[in-house]
Length: 219
Image (cartoon, rainbow, N blue to C red; front, side):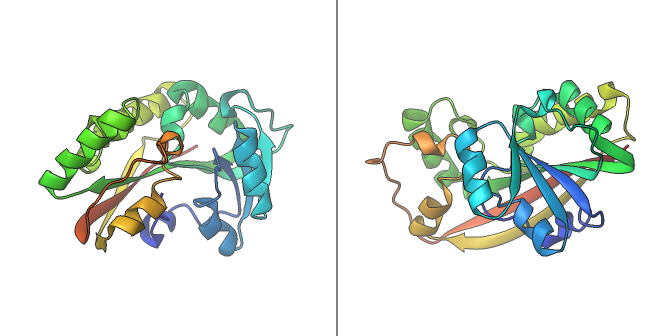
């Protein structure tokens, strides 16, 4: 997963202490920590937790909905490319419980929009080798393909009854991505760790529109 750009992150970086839900490799937390914020990761996978710790992050192993904050309160709860794995109502309720008054929940996603012919080819490849991932279901078609995830997130925040009306921010950028650059960024993407080592995708110089979307609400 490529790093989230600075523009939407600025909406979440003004606070000082945060919980990173599903910290994973720490790629979403890096920018916050570099900006002087204190970051605590909550990660359900023990292996990913150990990796994040090796990168200098404090991590507690737990499913976020069941995590015990032991009375601690935070300024912001962030989730970079992970909130779709969280129960939308239980997760928002837990976030409200651990946030200080005025705290913020911020869920971020990167999306990709390839040229139509390449997007179709990639979807066919992923359907063959990773049929149970979003990439086999048209997720290279840009942010509109993620609309069900965003709507589910917003609905969960509303149903929790503890936050203001959710806001949505979007930042677009375009870059040329070579075959090797895409393959080097694929392993952190959900599901790609199951990709057979013998599989490959051959394309060069594709222009990729990448969008970062931030779903956020104040307590």
